[in-house]
Length: 238
Image (tube, rainbow, N blue to C red):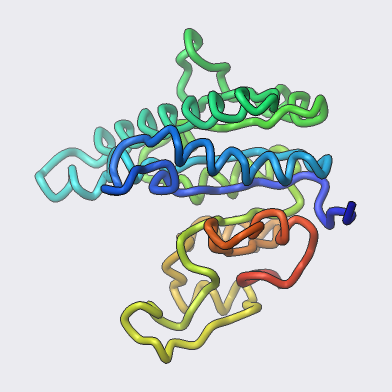
């Protein structure tokens, strides 16, 4: 078995990964597919923490477009991430992977409150930790939550698993001639205003020298290949 390059990873996945054909809600079959990808990494002995998004259930900008208060819209999004976390935990547990859900907003009837040392302890004991409710604060995205939690639990890399296979100079679906980048510096990514990851998350990783790898979640073995150190997607680093 190949030796992983990273011992502990933070995986950021969009909520859309759990959606059905219509792009909305939680499809148990999709949750199972995503869980299988996580298990493939877990089976290498890698410690895995996951931060899910909420786009399959709620997008705060939709509420803002109708005059909703930003804090309210963001709190609704945080609750949606917890639903996704529970669905993913169920799928992983059914595969025999011991999993814990922690949330930045306390809801102890269904999940543990996020406690940094407790999360680290779970990882060291071989449990996948899924962290819901973002940072627990409005005005911060789940990308930023993933970067923050990655730093707190000592992850060695932040893997952003999305629906594009790398960072491009512009949307490749709009411009097929868009330039694909295998590697970017943090500053280059910030100057480009990279669309697949928000600037706060990139800045936080830059300040703490945490590499970011942007990959296509649905490319075969993409997460596993990234963890093994194979050249895939775009790496953002110093």
